[in-house]
Amino acid sequence: MDAVLQSVIPFVIILIVLVVVHELGHFVTAKLAGVRVLEFGLGYPPRIWGRRIGETEYTINALPLGGFVKLVGEEDPSDPRSLAAQPRPIRLAILLAGVVMNLLLPVVLFAIAFMIPQDVSIGQAQVVAVDPGSPAAAAGIQSGDVIQRVDGREIRNTADLSRAIRLNLGQSTMFVVSRNGTVETLTATPRWAPPEGQGQVGIRIAPRYAFTEREWFPIWEALPEGVDATVETLQLARNEVISWFKGGSQPALSGPVGIAQATGEVVEQAGWLPLLEFGALLSINLAIINLLPLPMLDGGRIAFVILEILRGGRRISPQREGLVHLVGFAALISFVIFVSYFDILRVISGKSIFQ
Image 1: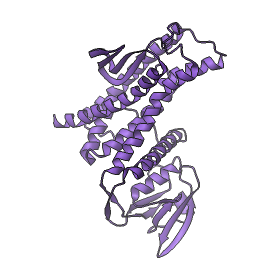
Image 2: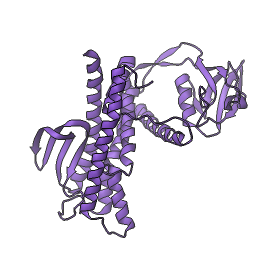
Image 3: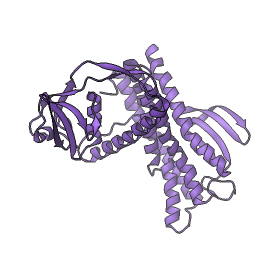
Image 4: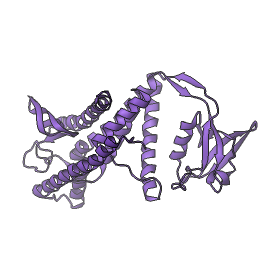
């Protein structure tokens, strides 16, 4: 029971924060534009609870797969206060507002994490082995080298080095290393698809020392750090997707059950503090997914507006657009159920989601 609660409680907290922030973007933008908001829902029907305040009903629903803001006339422009009746720039702003909020939330979460005092490794990153024929070997990196900087970034620990390498996949990258009291500047290109058992550069690393220091930032420094962390995370996500097509890593799909398992494992292995960073990663993933031009998602609705622009202002009929989104919703729910089936099998077998 404790293990279940350890997974469910942080998952519910993260889910509520992500959904509320995303839908709040749509909600506030729609209200400012004068669009009538019929419902602000957490989860998907069937409904568990609801309360009307003004012209909007606020509901909690049974399926914990996200949330929604229901606007008047999302496809039908007959009502002057409908979404579809608004000028195209206003519609795009309302549809994009959720994604924008999901990109702003990680800045806040990362900044909060930077403001909380925590022990950070400063043990440096030392090369303990170099794979023959690898980019590291071609660049002249040797066992025993201490990597000080990568692409101008200071390397304080092995995590810094791994992140810097993944940020520079496919790019000629400068490695500044310390070797026997001298400093060498070497150039290597991290690979998109390294051979099995090798890393992108072809080195094995370990901490040189077991030193840590207590670190935290005041808010005026934490916010810029949060911006940098968010931008870098987007770059890492881009590189991850590119690597799928270049023969590197394969996409890993998880539904609500898998995310709940992951939150529980994060708390179990590292405590509650890393949930801030985990929540930031999920928020960025949610923003990216919602931008995909798939029916029912924000990106699908944006695609219809763009199509309208390309057609010289001629709309797709509300009936056809509504049908497309309905089919898309059914497909989305079916996909989530399919993925969740394998998540449940993994949980029952006792396997970690990070394996």
